[in-house]
Amino acid sequence: MATMKMERGALWEVSSRTIVYAAIGAALYGILLVAQIPIPGSTVSVRPAFALVPFFGYAFGPIVGLFTGLVGNAIGDQISGWGALTSWNWSIANGLVGLIAGLAPLYLARWVNGNLRDRAIGGAVAGAVGVVIGFLFTFTDVIIQAGQTVGASTTSYGQAVIGDLIGTVILVPILVYAWEPVKAQLGR
Amino acid sequence: MNIAPRYLGRGSWLARRDPRVLILVVALFIFTVLQIWDARIVLGLLAIALIYYRTGNIPWSQIRRNWTVVFVFIGLLVLVNAIVAGGETATVSLADAHVIFHLPLLGTPMSAESISVAVTLFLRYLTMATIGFPVAFAIAPNDFGVAFRRLGVPEKFAFGIDLTFRFLPSLAADFQSTVDAQRIRGYDWSAGAKGFLGKIRRSGPVIVPTVVNAIAGAEDTIDAMDLRAFGTGKRTWVRQLTFDRTDRLVLLFFGALLAAATVWGFSHGSAIWTPEFLIDLAPR
Image (cartoon, rainbow over all chains, first blue to last red; front, side, top):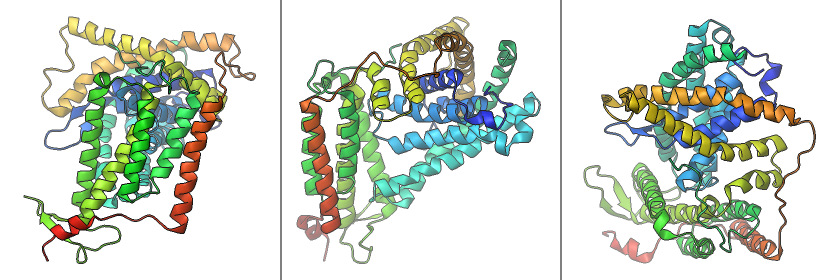
């Protein structure tokens, strides 16, 4: 079912496998969010755990990616005490990243169906596309927080995109390289 | 490694409410606050949020750090916003604004109007965070799945939420085991890396095995669910949720608050309140 070489119809299938992978992705993302690496001289932090969102989307489909980002970010906020729903639009933005990365078979078919190296590169590209587009949803802060300027939202967007892009481009290919042999071993 | 959500409000008045009440109150109250721009009314809403928060009996000593993070986060957000705004507001241009001082080094003008916006924004964020805290600390983690299901979230996704909370402790333990195993081999992912790119690369040998093990180990759970015919029929939940009279009253109160804010917003509008004393501080 939902692994990298997937049929278009299988993209939206919701089975026990989808739910379990989604729950594992969300739980891991929520847990690993505790680790953040600040970029010296800026207010940006790289969150290595964020790479799980595009990876789970890319490896297991858009539903898993959406769930991993949406619920994982909410769980991370819940664990940190911020409250699962307080920054709901940022959780949706995280979910969109996973969703867009999960749609890679529709726009990166050559890489997704290529050899291992191609699939790893495809993972990084899909993740990067997901990060750049998905986080645009955070501009809803301008509407929700009507007093927040577009400039301030652009700053928040830029910080999130820079930090998460770095983590995604480095870690998603590593995760793809690690997961593919295991997947073959499991017969998936 | 204790990573599970902390159910600190256990036994409190708020924790005895139907969990859907706490979720719905956040939604109702956030949309109420979003419509109000007069800091005096926002202060009133903050007072309501604080009273609501107090009924959760969340021990201050255990969440002091969380509140510090909230204040720092909101403070930075508001500060960046004020700097980017450069003394202007959505309705007052810099030429019409009452500039009180310029920020040292940056030279950004700070006007009575932009300071009022910053203070109001701070209060609004604080109010929303205050109403959001009980969701984090006064809902039993195993109630989230059934609560979202009863709020209309599709069954499989609600079960996914439930499953996510159930996976947290075991996956956190697996993560800690991986960290420890790597340390025994002399690999400490949090030390020894040069530069932040090096730190990210060093996180790989800890994150990758944790993730791959978790996915590979999921087969047992998937098999168990398939053997129980997951998703083939309507699911029932052990935990039954019913609104009692108090739950309905709480929802009625917050619903009325939202209705009042909406009606007031459409009929009168809500504008930023700039105190006279701030305007007087500006040189004439």
